[in-house]
Length: 390
Image (cartoon, rainbow, N blue to C red; front, side, top):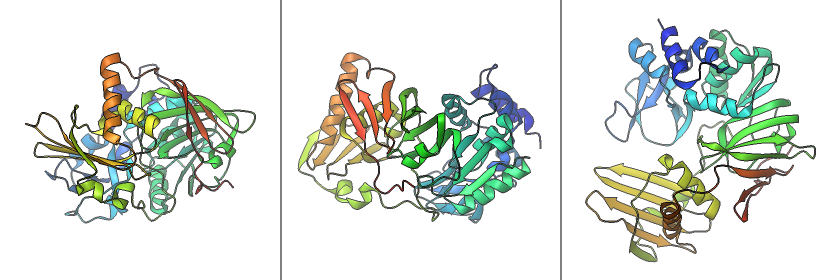
């Protein structure tokens, strides 16, 4: 199999010629880490179908060396275990992250030779392979909560010639060591105190906040906390899981089904069109900073677009729009009018032409409380009570 030329093309696509990560991307056989995957590209609808690499080698190479994320598990059903004709629809629970994002997270972590690095959320094992190439296996640890993922990744890393430390643990609980750098390829709703405890003096961690596009880089301080900033870069990862079942607990929308079909307390016509939060990083982040965690669900089919927003306080909004509609029909209920807030944010951007400063200062207390300075406000992301601290 001629994978080296494909890997070289990928490296040229996602790295600068002077990048210290270019050779790692060039020399790493990503196809070994994505032998099977779920995708919608060949299903023609909302369902995902299994793609099998070895059965169609040319397609396997095209997929593996594309700068794309490939879903490998849906609601705990890993593509490795699915029949060839399997179809499913559900929530992705594991993936092989697009290589460009992996390299970007490493770049924000400011990794240098001789450092010991924790790759937090093993996934397919590809990110750990890049670290091993750059630093040496003995400097790399990778952890995941899913025992199948760590087992499969360890085997595939060995096939690629690497043997880092691989552990099956809850990434928000006590971690098996301390490191100079922690890079989280999974998002969290609050910073686990365990990460700070595992970060060596002078160390740095890079992570994302669930439900936003915020990438935060923070350096450990003498008091056991960290200081840093929201980086001028946007990214999103799947939310952290606390057990190896391969599934997530029901989200806010599942707990509040009236948001999907209910009339609501107020029905209006919106000013701005329905948007896909997964493609609107900055708006999604501003919504989080203004109103806190917001669960969402976006669907698009046959020219009809629907966005549902739900907050923990019981507020919800549903905006529905067809191609020939002058504005979306908006249903809202609860203590806050979420869609009104979205429209205020969009109006601010349209009239000012910018969201605000490209970076925001961040301070993290030793207990994991994260404080983001957003203009005159301090947005506090509390320590999650269900995160063990030892």
